Image (tube, rainbow, N blue to C red; front, side):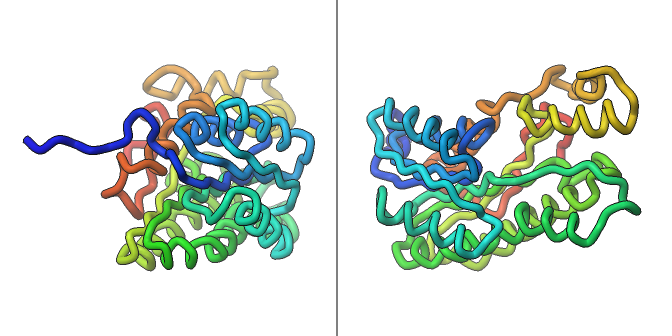
Length: 269
């Protein structure tokens, strides 16, 4: 058997990563995992102080870090993020489209503004930020894009988050299409589909859906959902970050166009 020559001890040495929504939760965990694996990281978020906190944590691993306070929902914000990454750490080898929002609203009470905001941040921004970064990856014939979809993009997990579900299904379709568009250049595009993850977003769902709409006690909705998870627990940001690290690394060199479930067995397709 031929020896396998992979930099297992330092998977991402010399790589430059951009992580959006990196101030907390999954985005922060991803930034730290990538840094620990050897990557320099640009962290972008709306919260300048919190994003700088993540950048400081990245530097503790001996990696370079750039913090950017900008809005992925705007063209100017996306361009500012990419420019800051390019000038701060160098051309982007790994793009993690993590920034996203949730809103609980009954389908027939949803406004056009609700719809546009959700799709604008969760889907449109993913495409146009990828559009800014992918040509450089194609030119250099290397790179990896990983976007945050959701199990909600595969199953109707809640009627009061219809536009969220649509936005995440869009990310899955976008991933498959972009993967085909750049595959011949050796660039890979994948997405992950988390389930119940212990983050502020799920606490927001508990407040707005469980407590406000269903009249449940604090945490009861989350407990109900966890009871349906075959592995019997909520996921952690680190559970998601480890899969993203794998997809960004040479270990996943033969994987593209995939929507990987991180749901504790809740979704198996």
